Amino acid sequence: SPPLLEVNDLTKHFAVRTGLLGGRGAAVRAVDGVSFSLERGETLSIVGESGCGKSTVGRAVLRLLDVTGGQVVLDGRRIDDLSAGAMRPLRRRIQVVFQDPFSSLNPRMRVRDILAEPLRNFRLARGARALDARVAALLDTVRLPRDAAGRFPHEFSGGQRQRIGIARALAPEPDLIVCDEAVSALDVSVKAQVVNLLQDLQRELGLALLFISHDLAIVEHMTHRVAVMYLGQIVEIAARARVFAAPKHPYTQALLSAVPVPEPGAARDRIVLKGDVPSPIDPPPGCRFHTRCPYAFARCRTEVPRLRRLSPEQEAACHLHDRPAAENPLA
Ligand code: SF4
Ligand code: MG
Image (cartoon, rainbow, N blue to C red; front, side, top):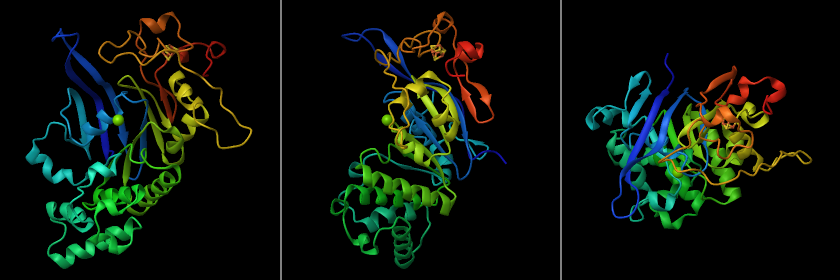
């Protein structure tokens, strides 16, 4: 059977005006040729610095924006070009948890009504008793007390509010949840609890998660695979163990060098990148990372590196891997 989700050569350009007083038109190349797939029950994390396009990928999968090119395929069926009407019955299957539970929960609605809304919209419970039973079951699922149903969002802590957000996402019984920085705003200890809950739910319910995050320390504990994005493109995509033990792209290596290593005595070489992320309006030619890469050589400035499979569970887009091992610091 096809993967649950396939994203093929996804591109999203936003039109902007550059310069003062309505200068020439230009395009922000927020996402430029992104491809990946996701199996049922799998977690794929998309990581990268803010502005790398990871949230745009999430929003395209959720059909919250129209794509410029490429395809989003759910269960073998293309969804990026469906009308709102044709999309409606499929909406149930892809849900979202956003970063900020404060702004994504209506402060004037009780938790019962917040959870009943998707149940009603998707006709998953009929009548007050069936609704109440489903709401109680959802609160159990996210480990909140049942009396939470009668309370308002402001009566809960940040972590509890995010559990309400997760319960709302679970209400329509989705196959896939897009988590966009879903734990980034939470305190460290609360973060771990919410991540553990997501992992438990994934196992119990067979959910797939597209986990969008800038926080590699969190990702390391809960993902199956990782896609690293830089300036609108995936530069490395690999199984978790491969990425964290032996990154094959200099940008991945640099991101990881900033993540504390859990084992005492172990250390990663600290790599501080020079310069800022270039503008996605006019990305550098050749390898987009060449202006900041500590290993850049002549070819990197002119020739675009393509994602290449280096082992069964690891692909990276870097010219170093065409060199002999003795001249490849990431070999
Ligand atoms: Fe660095 Fe060149 Fe590899 Fe790009 S292709 S990451 S510039 S070594
Ligand atoms: Mg974002």
